[in-house]
Amino acid sequence: MVGVALVVGTEEGLWSSGGFSRTVSLLLAAHGVAVVVMGSEERALGEAVGELVYGGGRGRHVVGDPRVAEHLAAAIEKADSVFGPLGIVIACSFSPGEIMGALGPLIASRAIACDVLLLRPSDAAPDKLAERVAALLLAPTA
Image (tube, rainbow, N blue to C red):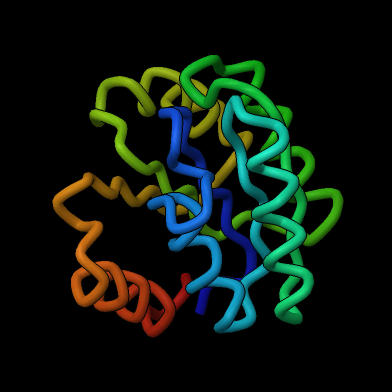
C-alpha cells in the first residue's frame, strides 16, 4: 500500500473545490495516505491541504511547476522529510512527456524510486477516479 503520495497539477481549477487534483488528494487521504500537493495556485493548494487535515488526513503543499526538475525535486524532498519515502507521483492532466521530462532525471539518478501515475481528464468521472485510486491503494509495494 502507498504511504506517501505527491499529487501534481498546474492547470487553473485543478485545485479548486471539486477540482480533479483536489479530488484525487482527498481520496488518497481518506485511505490514510499522506499527501503532498503541488501546483501554481498557492491559495487553492493551502485550502486543499486544510481540507485534507480537517478530514483527519496528513498533507502539505509546495508551490511550483512540476515540469521543472528543481521544483519537483523540492516537492519530493518535502514529502520525504515530512512523511517519509515517496510511494507514488500522481500527475493530473499532463502528457507523459511533460512530467517525465522532469521526473526522468530524478529517477535515473536514483534520487527517487516510486511509481508514476498519469491521470487524464477522461479519468475524472467519479467512478473511474475511485476505481483508479482503489487499484493504487490495493497494489502491493515492492
